[in-house]
Image 1 (cartoon, rainbow, N blue to C red):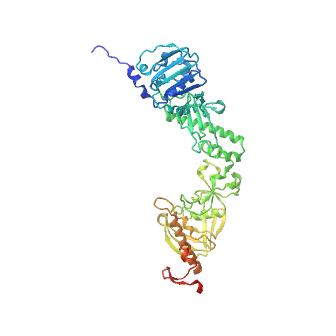
Image 2: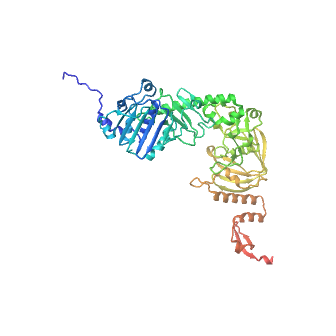
Image 3: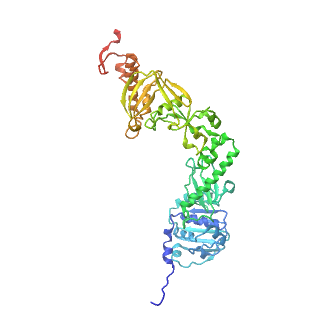
Length: 551
């Protein structure tokens, strides 16, 4: 073959026009495109009116110079400046052809009108004289979709739009529109941070707009999101809907970095303007995420980063072993370094499986009124990280059981354990010695391989809340990880009886404790008296009812 065959890109124009309706993701796209056209034409507002099946869109912009450009796919018809700044695609208006049966466009004293079927069939349409000399008016008759969806769609479009949108005479709210007095200029565009205290910390949203169209985020009336209006010379949206950025993942990460840099700058400024206490109380959580460097040497820490131990308990959803020391105020570096505040790092719950002295350490901290710090709320290198860690060897304690007594009983729950009486537990630690004489404390016993499989629950002489110490190694969860309160109460009652019996409590006190949960019919048994017999195994048996009158 001597001739050279050549090929080139071509367009099947009929098929392209016929399938345009599948290019747009939803029916409301044409509304956004029409409003966008008005803004690009220099309009100061857009009026949209709905009357039955007829929709009219009017603006006060520069109008349409060439009606053919309006209907030419890929030819935007905009001037060079608009094309360089906004990259118009030249397809948006054609989406309106699929939204109605009849279309009329009026601008600069001219108009075109006809059926959309004829336009889509690429039939010629005459340009005739029209009555609209200023701006543009577009009339769509015989709407092909549910017109009740127009108002909600317009409200969503308007949220960040540059010019007002009026629907049936009422202005639609534009809460996130670009206003230079509320926005900061950055490398990515304009950014507004309405609430520096909560940005990034309480599920706060970020809404990103390009040319007034939302391209990232979800709009919520009740949120205070970060608002970003992108520089259209640096960012491009996916055509034809423009509701998603090209290279969205990378671009959103870039935008987040820009937001983070702005937040950091604002926090640095706030740290200069506010006193140390006010800055810590107001901006700690935000700074931890966006500006940890400004916290590293900040001399004050808010008290809500600490907890005060109220009980010695293992972890469970339903336990509340600690409380926030709201009355403490702010924690200062000077007070910590002088030793005025006893602060430790670690968990606020007992975990004998990790550390057999876990309960001993926490009993020691409680006795000193110490605070347990949430480590994840401190930046790397912070001065409070010099506090000892309860769960590591750098918090070393030694204990001594004073006047160890008899074993009250043994059982097996999460651990094999025994309950033993004592006068008190003396604990020596980094803050000096304390004596625990009114609180049960469980001490683990290392088994094979250093695994704690047994424990001894020591009961000092002045302890009144008896049996509850078992909660230091048993959470009483059922198979669904729910609290088995009945099993917990029964176990604690049983252990309390063991302890009372080992303490040589009177038989009357033991029986009253045993019978405290028994309930009978008041009407028939009220005031009745019985003689009980205790069997060799500890069971009770009624042997005689006593007539109250004979006594």
